[in-house]
Amino acid sequence: MDKKVVLITGAGSGMGKQTALFLSTFDFIVYAGTREPEKLQSIKQTNLIPIKLDITNSSDIKQTIDTIYKEQNQIDILINNAGYGLVSTVEDVSEEQMYDQFNINVFGVLRVCKAVIPIMRKQNSGIIINISSFLGKIGLPLLTLYNSSKYAVEGITDSLRYELKDFNIRVNSIMPGFFNTKFARENLKTNFETFDKNSPYSKIVSNLAPVIVDQINNGNDVKEVAQMILEIIQNDKFKARVTVGDKAKKFIPMKKELSDEDFERRVREYYKI
Ligand SMILES: NC(=O)c1ccc[n+]([C@@H]2O[C@H](COP(=O)([O-])OP(=O)(O)OC[C@H]3O[C@@H](n4cnc5c(N)ncnc54)[C@H](OP(=O)(O)O)[C@@H]3O)[C@@H](O)[C@H]2O)c1
Image (cartoon, rainbow, N blue to C red; front, side, top):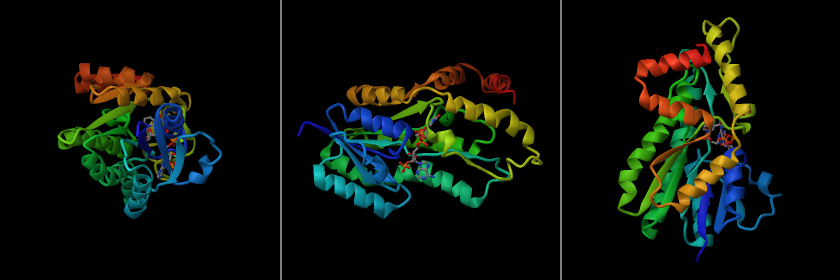
């Protein structure tokens, strides 16, 4: 069989959906994993197969992976894309909100990896691409939980690269800047207390939150992410992690060049925080 089999998580919208559509125009069979596969049924694209996937549920994941394996007898590429952003101060965040942020953005990635790796190991081949964020290398106030979840995704990439190398499984990370998707419009979760007008954090909330939301909603086109994913798949020697989008290309090199304190000063000036 010539066609590589791809599984993408969180493929119901944004980067995941665009990547599923894009890859399915090439020599791939693409399983678009989503909580609501019925929403993708109207797409009549050969090689794009919507499949139910809830990354919070290990038995659901196993069932999905088993189905794909039964149908194709291989899984070549996993794209861990599903994720959302929690906007809350640490002081206000609830146990449930903390857990949920990590449950989706971190444990979800680990659960799907855990289910797919045995198949890739037996095949002696595979590619895992983790969609983290430029905020996986850079902190911002109100985004501590999101930041730390994406820092964790970066750690997962780094460790798995060693762990899976002997089995010819390649692990890469993409750190997008801001992209115009449903991320800020529908999937951001905000803490009620942090956003209360009487919150002691109201100054930082009013300075930063609308700017970030605006930058996401006017962000880059997700086609850039899909194109980058194709390049990573096609190039065995691709570097471990890559930035995509204006904000990532601006801040990540700056973070590498400057001291922590100088970088922080630049970010404070830029966001007026
Ligand atoms: N947009 C940006 O500016 C930006 C920047 C850097 C990194 N990222 C990262 O890029 C990835 C894709 O995001 P996107 O921008 O394409 O946003 P999106 O349009 O909101 O898509 C995110 C997908 O993640 C899944 N998801 C969202 N909230 C979830 C929840 N509470 N539980 C389970 N699954 C959930 C959904 O999958 P289903 O509904 O299909 O199940 C959704 O389609 C995320 O990991 C995000 O953190 C985005």
